[in-house]
Length: 375
Image (tube, rainbow, N blue to C red; front, side, top):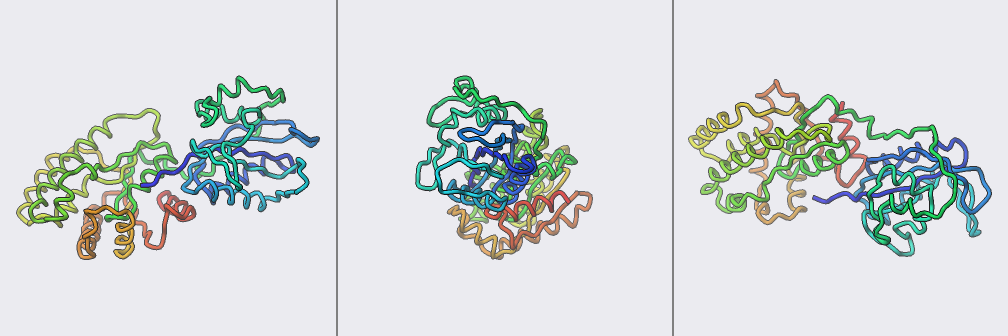
């Protein structure tokens, strides 16, 4: 599961409606580049190095899968779309919008395209003040000092003061406040864990991930299903109960809700496929004894993908023990989820077909998926 990089971007404008220019740029970054997770206040700052109207500056934190080189190319395109004019005379000029990559994770990048961390930012009050507001403890990877420390030692005497205008985070237009517990479900390879991770980061949620990778019986089951099916399902029964009970019981006052990449009732779906009839009846009896008081999700999101796409996803992630999964087995799981959803009408379920979507690689697909979950 690939992690998104935390990136800090500086924004500035001294032409036209400066606040509107900054907001339009943030909206474009949200739609085209990555999730905006923090936005500073706006700051009035004098033009540095040339005579011009004062700037309105801000900093934002985003999370993106893109490389630094792809990111800067997209930011330059956004600048151009917003009317930024560039000159080759070596002089400073006023601009409708200026977008600079300040930090790209903790990477140090120096090539013909860009330099990161942004050079001389430690000498610029209009960068350090908004950075301290949103990332006071973030350390400059070359100077090994926090933003607070850099601001305290900054020699820039420019008069920088906070402006009245407030920039809005477009991510906050997606409202999930109605839910305390969301479960993301789907077939093997549907992208449950990726979506859970992305949403947990974007919406300040506590995440719960199934610990299948630590189950020693899973590879054995794929090699010899008849021998290890009951052992595997019992081990999942115990582990899921322990995990979900502990995580749901531990309230996190700093998180807005809980999101998990599984619902405990998947145990009944998979066990019905893998076990003999007698074994399943015994297993089901044990399951309801164990989970009789377990908290159920307020929203159950089922990600549907066709089997060919699932097989491609499974192959791409390259887990050896999944290499022998065939279409027939995935088809049985499809049917198992379908039967479960039909037989539990009391659950709030959203079935979303993502067969022709790639919400990890395509930002637009991710935003579409969030809209489907919210709607």
